[in-house]
Image: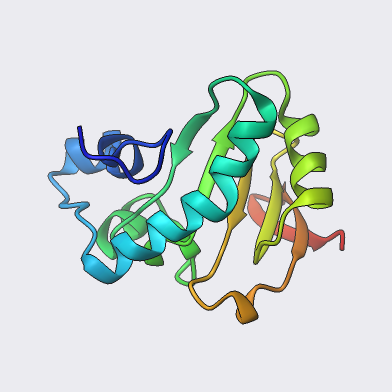
Length: 148
């Protein structure tokens, strides 16, 4: 089985029900694949080691076509392979706070009351902003509020 990192398979990092349903190719190129491996190793694997049990990867790489189909932001880090959405099902607040205190990242987002945690890491680590945001829906639109 091809792996992106110790605990994330290639299949897990590229799978999408929307892509399958719409026949969208969600295959990363070599640059995107390298960015995915980097993001996984610099963020997810550290979280997984600390947490000590499985963490669901609900979204990782999205091709431009898939990102458009799911109505993702045109500047989404998922398109470059920089971002991972993680879900523990019941410890997301703990995971979010640990990431905020212990990791370097570009963005850490508390998504919609903690349904999942988004973390991104850029290939050029000098571009990581350590920006912490809260995503919520206001009048039918996603609004990001900076926490840190």
